[in-house]
Length: 315
Length: 315
Image 1 (cartoon, rainbow over the protein chains, first blue to last red):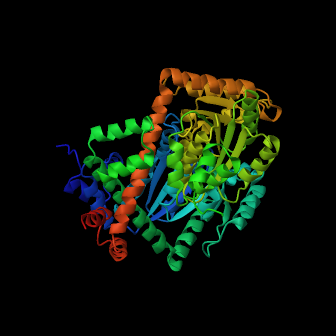
Image 2 (cartoon, rainbow over the protein chains, first blue to last red; image 1 turned 30 degrees about the vertical axis):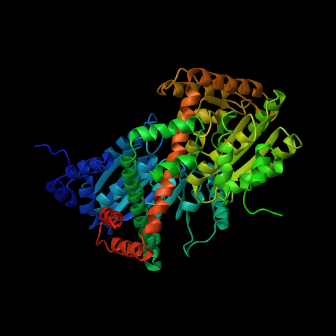
Image 3 (cartoon, rainbow over the protein chains, first blue to last red; image 1 turned 30 degrees about the horizontal axis):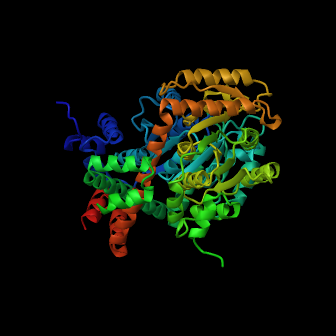
């Protein structure tokens, strides 16, 4: 019998790390299937052991290849690894899927590796929430390191980066040439910086530009973000990058920052759930006719948005 | 006497287009000063005549120069113009201010032009709301065209683009070389596409790449986005671009799309106000101790986020 929503058996199998159950559980979370709350609740108590590592940066920086190499290095260190590849960009880019297939071929057959792609479904806010929930499921299923790869730059990346304990910003030598590339908040979110494709011209100049920009960053902790060089296609610098992540994670634990970051994340998640519940409850109390009437008056400028809000809240 | 919040006199002067009053009114909106609601309510009834034009694209595409030229062309056509330059990027980039000073020198002294920069203040959602509100004030003050310039690519641009009636995506010849540049939703939001710096190599190839990508876009209207070439620094192609905007605006009016876009925008704005009010009212009802207790239980994993939300909503 094929179940339509997560049942006790599926939840148990997911928590044991059963790959088929895990894949189905993640789909339920992504589709907000009925019963996914029960699944997430069951997972929640078992979360906390995994370390979540974010890898972000502009398109074309070679993040997919780098993440594949990172997974291989973690496997060499006998850590189990899950990869969550998030593509919040245009649905017709297709990049995520293609990169994923190449990667699957390289990592296939290793039971200590699990790969999952998450694509945008219209709601970018939803994508950040689903990514965090997918990480909870993978954490509860026993994966020790979760690599979260995000494409592009922008608000969605900032939100997804907040899901990670440690985040690396991946750039290419040319990125450093222009202060423009440093915009869009990328400099603020990095715990580590990586110049990938560092065998190209300008890698040293790029690293220097990043260090100069970092010097301007308001210090928020004792941690000083390192700037590392990699050539992911050849595996160069990958060992050092994994060591960099592990050092940062150890630092976070010692400094109490891991606890603080996680507390803030839980608080944010609670707020999101409350926002959604408040809205659902409010909208169910407003009759559709009353809603449409207010919108019509708004369009005709007979009421202002504030007046319309006040009237709906008063009713 | 210096007033601390918008009074009737300031509101009247703003609606008459008095520049000093307008500058202060916009600051009140941006800072959410007490009384700014009264100002926005007074402006709302007078909005609707202005046309809002978005100019977006990646950093370095030459948007500031292009917007300056567009303003000059609109002035030549005897349209009054307001420029709202939005920089949602890193606070230490400084780009917005620098570009603004150059522009001010070029457009200074013309009473038919008004320039306003809006910078991020931590909350990106807030920036999109403030930009829309600033446009309402400028609309009510009688400006016929409002040029909204946004830096970077990402979720914040998508939100800001939704404020505009017509949006041009500005790229450079090299952008077209790579399908990567087409990501992050840029292809979806453009009503017009511009290759700026078109005197550089590869402009034709770039235009071709954009047209190919556009051919893949799901058709949502009868409008077929043109791909135009400009060299903003020399003023080349600017007349054609202004004509392109005017054609698109005329199309929107004929097709009824302008009405539909504006209705959706008003509905979204109403929802934002309601979300904020519901949250304020909820938080004011939860005692700080109860909130802290729930967070502590969450951190210790004694309750799940869903259980915590349910308990707070039940109390």
